[in-house]
Every structure is written in C-alpha cells, then in structure tokens.
Length: 452
Ligand code: NDP
Image (cartoon, rainbow, N blue to C red; front, side, top):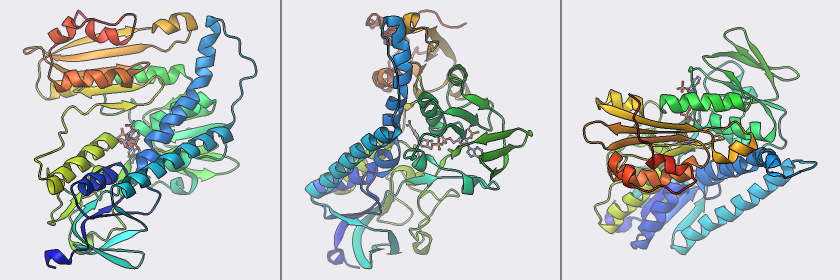
C-alpha cells in the first residue's frame, strides 16, 4: 500500500493509560490518529485497577483510624458502613475520569471508536464492520486476570474485576495468591470487617521483594487477623451452602467468596496477531525491541500487553517515548532502571532499586542499614502496626543501590527517595541531608550504623 493511501498515521488499539498517552502525544505532533477501545476509555488502571482499588483502600482504613482515635480522646458511637454508598461514590469518580479520558482524546483531535478490533493485514484493522488503514499500529490492549487450571476454580471464583464492584460486602473471603492484588485486597476486605483467608504456594507473600520486607508484611497480615495458608495448593473448589476450597494438605476452607489473584496475562488472544505473523512469547505477550517495535515493521506494542514492567507509569513512559520518537523525531527511550513501586497493603510497602538478595546475586559487596520502629502516632493509639526501613549500600562506592519500606506513608516517602537512587547518590549524601522532625521519613537520612 502506498503511503498516501493510509487513512491514519497511527491506529491505537486500547484506550488505557499507555494508549491514550501515545495517541495524545502523536496527535500533538500532527499525526492523524484513531483509537479503538471496546470499553469506556481509561483502561485497567482507571476502571478496574489502581484508582478504584486505592479508593477502596482509603475506604477500608477509616475503621482502624477511628479505633486509633480513641486514646486521643475521641468517642465515636455507632460506627456503621454502607457498602452501597461506597460503590456509588467510586462509580461516580470513575465516570468522571472516563469522561476526562474521552475529552483528552477528542480535544487532541483523535477519533475514538468503540468496538472490538482485530488485524486483517499488517496495516488494516477491522472494527464494527469498518476497515481502517494505518501507517503505524500500536497495540496497547493491556492484560487480563489469569486463573490456573484447577477443578472448579473458574466456576466459583471472582477476579479483581468483580472484587471492585461486589453488590454486598462478603462475611468471609478466601484470596488465592500473594502478589500485589492478593495482598491489597486481603487488607481491604479485612479493613471492612470481612474474615479473610490468604492461600498461597510460597512460604512468604510478595515473591521478588526484599526478604525482610516480606517477613514484616507477614507480621502485619497476622497482626490484622488475616488467616495465612502458606505453602498451600488447591486441589479443587466446589459449592455447597458456601464455597469449599479443598487444599492438598487436607485442610478445607469454607468461604462466601473466592478471589483469585494469581497474576495477569497479556490481552492478545482476540487480535488475530498470529494471522499476520506478529511474534508472541509463551504467555501471549507481544515481543518487542527497545523501541517497542514488534517483529513486523510498523506494528508496535506498549504496556502490559508486552509484559515488561506492568505498571501504569511504565506504560505511560513507553507510550510517550514511542510517540516522541515515531512522530516527534526525538531520540527518546524509556529507561527501565530503578522503577519505584508500591503495594497498597496496610501499612503499605514501597521500594526502589535492588533488594539485599538481588544485590548479592548481582555480585555487589553491600552494607545494610535498617530501622524498625513504632510510629509516633501509635505510641498513643495502641495500634501495633510498625514501620521498617532499609537501605542497601554498595560497600566500595557507598552508592545507595536500594531503598525499602513497609510502614505508614511508605509510597509517599519513597517517591522522593527514588530521585536519590536514580541520581546514584551515596550513603554520605543521605547522611548529609537534614531530617524533618518528627517524621518517619527522617529515618532514611539518620541510619548511622550498618548491620555487620
Ligand atoms: P503478581 O504477579 O504480583 O502475583 C501473582 C501471584 O499468584 C503470586 O503470589 C504467585 O505465586 C501466584 N501464582 C501465579 N501462578 C500461580 C499458580 N499457577 N498457582 C498458584 N499460585 C500462582 O500478580 P497480581 O495478579 O497480584 O498482579 C498482576 C500485576 O499487576 C502485578 O505484577 C503488577 O505488575 C500489577 N499490579 C500493580 C499494583 C501496584 O502497583 N500497586 C497493584 C496491582 C497489580 P508465586 O509468588 O509463588 O509465584
């Protein structure tokens, strides 16, 4: 097809965070852009992930906060929760955000098409009986929950999609998995008063995180009364008056709801990518190079559909860099080093850079600085939540390789620490920084003796 025959300079499949950012920036450089989305614009983060989840985290924390207030002299009678009000408030906010996304796209001159799209050739997309031609096509279709193949699991389980809009609060819930989603929902439901069982195959939750963070998180889960079933395998699931989860070690769990949070898989199965020869890995992720280009010229992919680092800011960065390079003539590439992250447990976890174990695996000689304390607020409240902070420092250069925290406000604190890690600052730079007193954050600049 000759260049002038293309209807669009760019067709974007998926109006999530990455797709919308790429569309808007490409359009700002003068590209003619069409964006196809089967749902409302917003994607996983806005509609089925980060935003409703964090609102639920806030909602679930109030009961604990009211309890904390008692020793500060507050008397609260008849604390009651109305699940319908919470659902309605969240839905209202999601409507607002989805319409902002539509406006961003429309105001930047993109055509927004609602429908299910698939490739019919490397430059042709079919949607709602229309065929669009694009000079470049960007796949930004995100991911979907993955459920292991276990007898009765799919029939009796919900995923995070449904957990975010349950018609009523369950009395009990079992959660399968111990990654980001499982941990966040365990604390959310616990906070609202649901009896929570957490079933996972490893010995500790949050595989891949620093060992001490995982141990401290395990303590916080236990402190909150969440029932832990580590090193557990599910044989089968069936329904009687309740959902019965039959574990391999002969334990049976009876529960009202079963939430499966055993990872997500790239959303590529409906796109007919195999028909046009786009290479996928064994999980169905589009294989891309450093410029997010697939093995087929002019077909690109960003975000969770590529299964690189599945976080919203990464998808935004990949989408922005793609548009800057391909339509703005800039030499921009997303840098995957030292991407900070957070798990919104209660208290939250946040980390940037290398864990102690990863630093050792990479051959660094390291010093470890830690601080473990009861937050000032809880010296009075009686709440037994603690804070734990850790710096991983290279012995020779004194460079801080990693920072880790579980405790109140960890993600808010870690965002600024991430600048220091990205700038490759040393422990001495941290030591020269004056603390803000009294805060938890000041511990990051006052840890004086290493653990050896
Ligand atoms: P994760 O990859 O974080 O965790 C998956 C969990 O499922 C792990 O506990 C894993 O066990 C377990 N698991 C996987 N396969 C099986 C199996 N066959 N049988 C039993 N257990 C299994 O996935 P999530 O679903 O929690 O989240 C998906 C992604 O979404 C995250 O990786 C993250 O990138 C993103 N996300 C980010 C959030 C944030 O930034 N706050 C919040 C939510 C999601 P094991 O550890 O033993 O492998």
